[in-house]
Image (cartoon, rainbow, N blue to C red; front, side, top):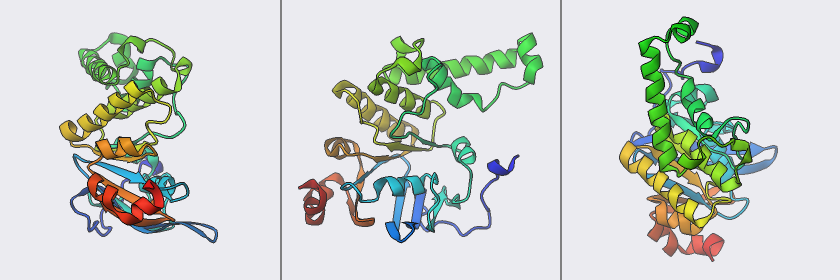
Length: 270
């Protein structure tokens, strides 16, 4: 095990949000004298879709970065299944079931769509090293067959079967986002973090994306968290919503509760 793959401190105090798969406790993020996120606590539960909304500059992306520990919080801690992961590496988090997409596409443009998806499961290895490759051991063949089957499943779910052999770098933005979604889903994540996932999508792709999120939550028990400007999409697909304004929590509740919240309407929904 390398230093970057080190496990979290088992003796760290457990998260008080014991029913959450991923939780942030007292998260604050400051840039110099500017407080972008101020003492925010958030909990994402298994089997639900949690949305983060708010006006521009509300702190959504900064909180999202802190929750995924891409940018460690200035204050506060992040917990995964009750264990403090604030100081773990991206490699550790990814290999333990936390997957994320970004506003800007993060693909291997020279690889095909299918190869981009398979990349997400290659870290598990095939077993047996180079010798297993040379003599084509049965165990290696079985693992490769299983990976291909997993890839086929998510390619179909995300509407990408006909594009599987296309170079990913030549895809339009909407299709590229669905490739990222497929890659995030193929390794059966426990937490799925989606950053502006509907940006650039056609209406038909938006519907497919919503179905992918719902299935991941309902059928696999994944905790889905998304930052999204499309309020209609959030209201339709989220179980709970957390509204931010000026770095602080404005309100949290069901979509209907958020719709009826006067402070949220005044600050964001209009």
